[in-house]
Amino acid sequence: MLQQPQKQKEQAAVVIPPVNIHETDREVTLEAEMAGVLKDDISIELKNDELVISAHRREPEIPKEYRVVHRERYPVEYHRAFVLGAEASKETISADYKNGILTVRIPKSEETKPRKIAIS
Amino acid sequence: MTLPIKYWHAPFDVVGLKDQIDRLFDGFPGLLGDRDPGIMEGIWSPAIDIYDSKDSLLIRADVPGMAKDDIDVTVHNNVLTVRGEKKKETETKGKCFIRQERFSGSFNRSVSLPSDVDASKVSAAYKDGVLEIVLPKREEAKPKQIKIDIK
Image 1 (cartoon, rainbow over the protein chains, first blue to last red):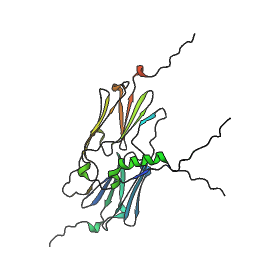
Image 2 (image 1 turned 135 degrees about the horizontal axis):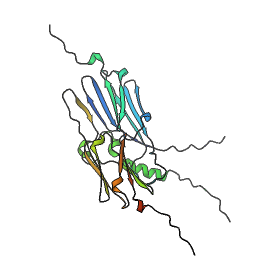
Image 3 (image 1 turned 60 degrees about the vertical axis):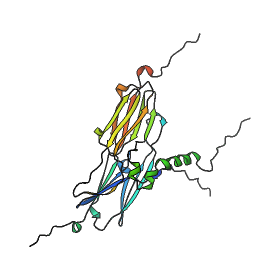
Image 4 (image 1 turned 30 degrees about the vertical axis):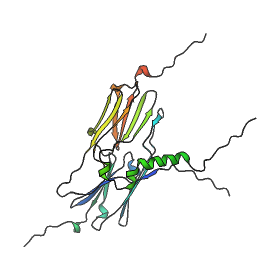
């Protein structure tokens, strides 16, 4: 049987997005820089203790009357994984994407938040 | 005699490979994952694409994480300049940084424009971290079809 030659997939470079992470008593916020991605092309997965963010930046749509003069922006596969500590409340992780920044909020579970103990 | 048309398959994707090598160096600090702010600071500038049509020029620039008002687009003497400042977050009481890899500081990028761009009609939009600038060309500069009667 003849095998169909495999169609060469458009090869997108894998890029590790730069992130800022900050922490408060209540939550850890992670901001990953990924410009020009569609919201539907972003995936956030939780595998055991590993939080994996990935996104596919598509080939830009060029209106057909235009021809390319100069290019520096290419399709990209964003990928990065983080290991969450025991205090992360995995069920309540939330995320949003705005202005090219993916923000992931990881609240801390109740029992690990610092508690003020009154002295009787 | 006609020659049969033959397709030549490169043993590997030569053009793609060159692209990948170019991109490897373009994205070098990013690929390392851990950007060293010491050497990266102050030298960031947005990646841009330039497209041309008979009516206008379209420029797209990647400027993630900006507020619309913090981006400044100017056209002066046929030079388009995109300027801005990525504000640095400061540590406050009760909020500490674990990682700080995103570039902060001011940046700018300039592009020489062809002389037929009408600077008064330039428009720009910002969405998903991408700045899109449309630079229409002057009416009189657009190519016109001239009919010549051949006698």
